[in-house]
Picture 1 (cartoon, rainbow, N blue to C red):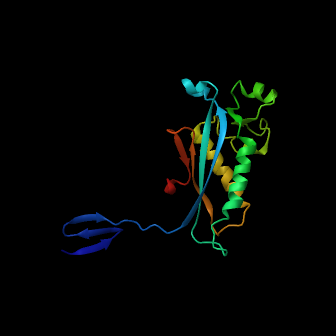
Picture 2: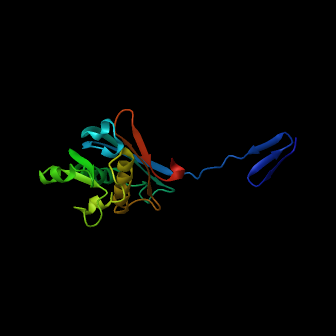
Picture 3: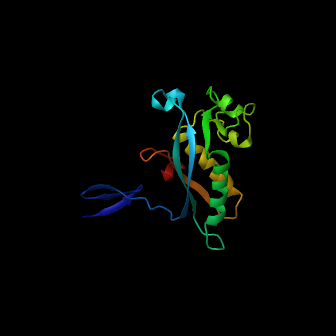
Length: 187
């Protein structure tokens, strides 16, 4: 039997076999947090049109091809504290609604904590809401996108390993429903 390699494939007298790609090694760390938040999804119809809450769980991972000079990807404590602070300030014990949801204004006016998805520059109450301006409704998928953006903004402000970046962010809204958002090659 004679084997030769050409164009990323091994050719053999017995047939053709694909060569497995060798992944570049990288370091990865993850942080987790839980928070309690209500939302509603009137655009989907069904039971999620009612205002309801979840015990949300988020896991954010950070990857880097090499460690920093102090031997870390990023200091866990600083990353956890800042991501948790953002979530607790803007989402925990609040309500996530789409900007077009008729409940958004009455709840906000009544003094409730409301985070609005889909608010443009004219409508956003805060810079934080602008992070979700292109996400019209607070689906679990959209919350994963938002929390990846938050995590990346936090990471950029911290000392970390060269080329460190947020990889996948997993958001779990129930024990059965989880969404992940991150680079396509990481999913």
